[in-house]
Length: 189
Length: 189
DNA sequence: GTCTATAGGTAGATAGAC
DNA sequence: GTCTATCTACCTATAGAC
Image 1: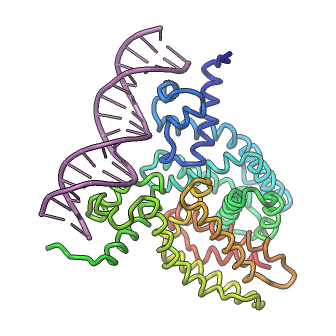
Image 2: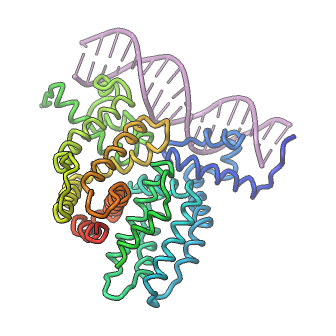
Image 3: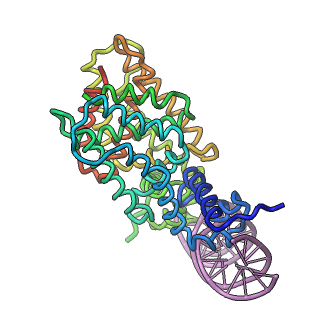
């Protein structure tokens, strides 16, 4: 017997499958048909919900933000109030720990970030904005005495992204959080 | 008047254009036809030289190694002879400086590395091998007193890759070598 | 809301002329 | 060695039945 899904559940199921497929093959590399197969639908049925491949990607980015960005933003309080070094390290560890629990989101991010370097990629504008915001937030967080927060933010963000990609490549063969803590301990004075 | 090219020059010109195109759109995202257009040929003419899209990719990886790997390997001498911290930092700076002069190779590497996370990607095996070798080499280089070289190698490689990607994303808007030196100075005890 | 059918385009690859 | 022509397959997207 076929389980019926309402509109919202169906959209959510498609988007979660899309996060995995796009993370694996990229925006150019995946096909609506392949994704529809994973959702036990036809391509026409899937397109009914999203209209076009590009609109689907934008919906995926929205969902990624919903799942991830809000939680991260909650960990990264606004305002330039200086924090202690220990507090900063704790916040960074919490972010990495959260990412370690969602490898498919890390992979989607890594894939689209590289693809979206191309100015004509549908996610290009999204990542330009997102990256600027991330650097600004990290610079606020890393506003430590005697430091240039912008330069430090760039280095910390880069090291975090690089280590997460390495973690995917080694098939999660090392403890991401522990290794990150070692990096952060040295990188942040 | 049309300039004639011999076989080897033609192959080289195609491979250099392929490095750029694949770096921009990925293996799945680019087409033989698009690449042939950039080389002022037809797709059939291009395929005469490489046989298939996959074989072209493998030839691209060979060429990347020829251009890059040999030079890097020369900077990273073999053997476990311990080096001073200053020597190590100098070697790392030389590697990054070389990469800064070849952004198209950095971009190709970043793109294929993420795509090749998929086990069925034609470059998957290549990157598994290459990554293991890179970590081993860096571990030899970073064999400093009182350090666990494997763990440190992973962190240093990750930070380097992450910063290079950031440098591409900000359209080379910061000094890659200077920023890397700041990172390395802190990351390596 | 999901299907079948199909339009219209592009892909990789091959055959054969020159 | 490069071309034109072509094959087969797959793509996105739409139209319309149910």
